[in-house]
Length: 301
Length: 103
Image (cartoon, rainbow over all chains, first blue to last red):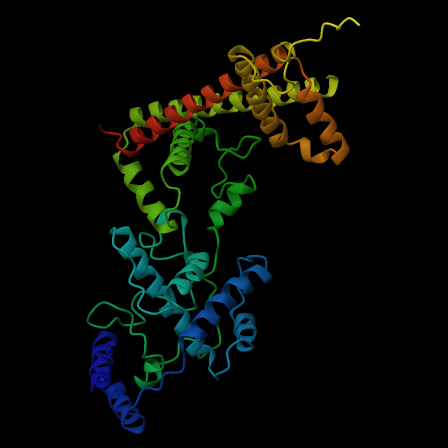
C-alpha cells in the first residue's frame, strides 16, 4: 500500500497526460511490487567505482559514462541497465546534497545505516566542494546524465525515494537515455575559466603577459591581501583549535569564524599569528644551533 | 725495640667516606647537567646517524667536559626551554582570542 502511495505521489510530480496514465496503470497491474535491485554494498561499489574511474581517466573533464558503466559492471554482481545505474547515481548524489544541507544548517548528518558514513566519504570525494558549499551550488560538478532537480521525486519527509529504483519504469516514464546520447555534465571547470588559465579571454579583451586582464589589476592587490589574511587565520584556527574534530565539524566551525570576523579583526589576528609563527621558526633555529654546539663540544672534548 | 708510630685508626681516611655538603651539591649538579645534555644530544637529528662506537665516544666526552662548560650549556638549554614555554603560552592565549574573537 505504501508503495502505491509513493507511486501516486511521483505521478503528481511528473504530471503525465491522460494517455500516459493509462499505460502506467497497465504496467502497475503487471508488476505491482517494486523490486529492490541495489543493496548497501552495491551503492558503495558504485561510489568507489566513480572515484577509481576518475583516477583512472586522470580526471578527464569529458567523463565517459559508457566506459564507466562497463567499468563498474565487474564489481557489482547483479544485472542492471545503464538507466538503472544512472538513476542510482543521481539518487546517491541527491542524498549527499541533503546530508550537506543538514551540515550547513549545523545539524548532524543522519547516518541510519552502517555504510552511510563510508558512502558519504566517497560522495564527498566525487561531489564535495571546499568548505561544504555543495548545498549552495546544488551539489558538486559531476552529475549523472540527465540529472535535473525534478527528475527524481522525494518522499513526504523530504528524503530521497530510495527503494523506488525502478519507479521510472513502472511510471512508464520515457527513458532519458533511450537515444543513447548522454550529455556530458562532468565538466571540472567552466570553459571560461579554462580559457583564462591559458591566458585567453572569451571576449578578446587585452591581456597582459601573465594572463591577467588589464582592467582586473585595479584592486587586485588588496583582494590578494584579503585572501592571504583569510588563509592565515584559517591556518591558525586549524592549528590551535580544530585538532581532533571531524572534517565536517571543521568546515562548520571555520564558516562560523569567518562569518563573525570583520576585516580589521581578521587583519589583526592574521598579523599576530604570523608573528607567532616567525617566533617559532627562530626558536627552532636557536635549538638547532645549540644542538650543533653540543655535538661539537662532545666531539672536541 | 722501638715501636713505630702507627697511625691511629681514626686518622686513616675511610675510602668511602660521606662527601661534604658542598661536594654533594656539585656532584648532583654535574650529574644533572650531564643527564640534561645527554637527553638533548640523543634527541638530536644527527645522533642516530652515527655508529654505536661514535655515539659512545660522544657521550663519554660529554661526561668528561669540565663542570663549568657543562653548566654553561645546560643553562643555555634551559633558557631555550623557557622561551618555548613562553611561546606556547602566547599560542594558547591567541587560541582563546581566536575562539572568541568578539570578547
